[in-house]
Amino acid sequence: MSNIEPNVTRDGAVLLNRTALTRRLVAKLKSEEAVVAGIGHTNFDLWASGQRPQNFYMLGSMGLATPIALGVAIAQPQRKVFALDGDGSILMQLGSFGTVASVAPKNLAIIIWDNGAYHITGAQKTLTSSTVDLVEMAKGAGLKQAQWAADEEHFDALVGRAFTEDGPWLIVAKIDQTKPAGVTERDPVKIRLNFMNGLKASA
Amino acid sequence: MSGETTNETWEEIVVRVLKANEVSLVTYVPDNVLSRLIRLIEADPFFTVVAPAREEEAVAIVTGAYMAGKRGIALMQTSGFATIVNALASLACPFQIPLLLMISERGTLGEFQQGQAIVCRTMRPVLQSLGIEHFAIQERAHVEFVVDGMVRQAFATQAPAALILSPLLTKRAA
Ligand SMILES: Cc1ncc(C[n+]2csc(CCOP(=O)(O)OP(=O)(O)O)c2C)c(N)n1
Image (tube, rainbow over all chains, first blue to last red; front, side, top):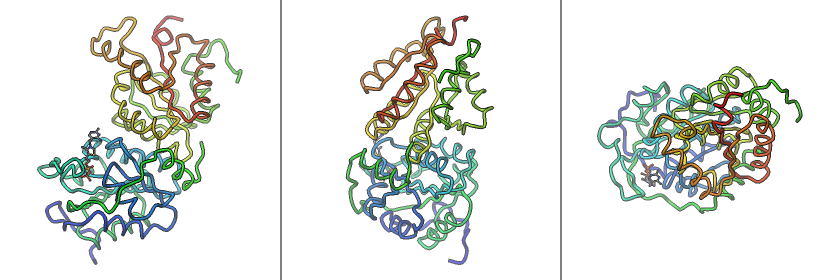
């Protein structure tokens, strides 16, 4: 893809697949980047893409993946941090766009999988299926580097920029409603300890 | 720690004890009772301060920072506490996060707002049913001992802790 900043809107974005994109993201991780994945399908697909010790699988707490990732980014400014979340989840915590913008962590990238639905609870429609555009919301909150992924190559290019250029970044991918490729093993303390070991953290 | 001087305010003692325990991240949604404490913290370069839009974010930021090796505390009032119950029950408790909360107790001992009075009565039953350690500080002379003890215990036992600031501490003339 030659043009790294096409003026893509939600309508113009190609319908992508969360499992495929999660795997593309994970394949690019080389320097022990932290990944914090939100409730349900988002963390299921991260789990199914290979269980890195630097992954945090958030089990409940709908909407809190981004602020958790912000906390990680503040504590370890040298480490790249990715927050992954669904549209229904981030719609619950839109203020966090403003919080991230005002803290302005250079090492944080937020990726939102927008399927226009609360898929895991029965695919009821979310606000993004009607009027809400998450990229516009984010820009209004001060996240200037917010973009729709036009297609898979453009997604790769945006992720590539998040690795090499200062954030905060927001990438929103319009995705289909296929089921995730696995299910996370639900043991909160084990998840936390693995993550803390992966981040070489003690406090 | 024995640095207490008789003319320290409760806010100054809190700042000193947080620093002694290396609690360097402070997140908050403000309350009038917390305003002097927030001013002291914001003026002190030791602290990283984040003021998000909601108390749930404040809790999640401290949680993420803890998992990445930085100690933090979230400040809020009782009404804010009422909005974080799901975050406590689904994040702080099951993941065993030593999440420190400092809650100014509004809605009791001379409150004029009915909403605050009613929501205030939900706080202790919630803390109790979640099994979260909590203690209301009523006297300036107790601030150092209680804050220091609760902070150390939270990290030693991997458990959230709620430090409640009673109007007896924050509103009564010294
Ligand atoms: C506070 C809260 N409200 C509702 C739920 C129920 N719930 C769990 S997952 C979910 C949908 C998540 O939607 P989204 O983030 O878009 O992810 P998707 O399922 O579409 O992948 C809902 C409503 C919850 N867990 N917590």
